[in-house]
Image 1 (cartoon, rainbow, N blue to C red):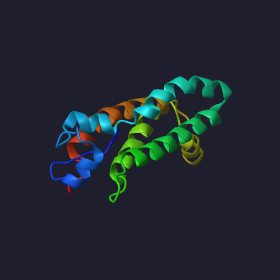
Image 2 (image 1 turned 60 degrees about the horizontal axis):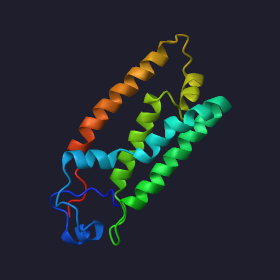
Image 3 (image 1 turned 90 degrees about the horizontal axis):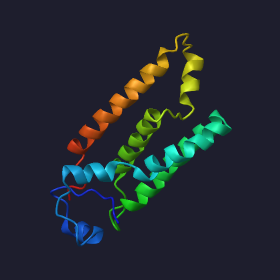
Length: 153
């Protein structure tokens, strides 16, 4: 299966390499589904409780490892011989996963680093992070498939 996104002007040679049963153009919903890093978004909430029981460093490690998994899998599943991977689709999937991690109350270890340089005495930063990550998820999920169309030829 390919997660390569096909735009209206994509060349026929790329299409034949990707899938013979594929439609000529990926619709909005097809682009949306292909851009969601389901392989990591599904695994993260299942493994995170175990990581939380070990410590903060384990949650950070889990987040970074799964981000690496997203990069590797998306690189492979969007690659076509002679054209390479869709780098933009890989980056979009990575950003999507980072947003999901924060929505699921995870972390990459960066919050601690930021708080070291910008001390915050108020606990409202947690509420702000949850609100902003949820808002980012909604906007990112709706908007990105509108603008990113994939290969144009």
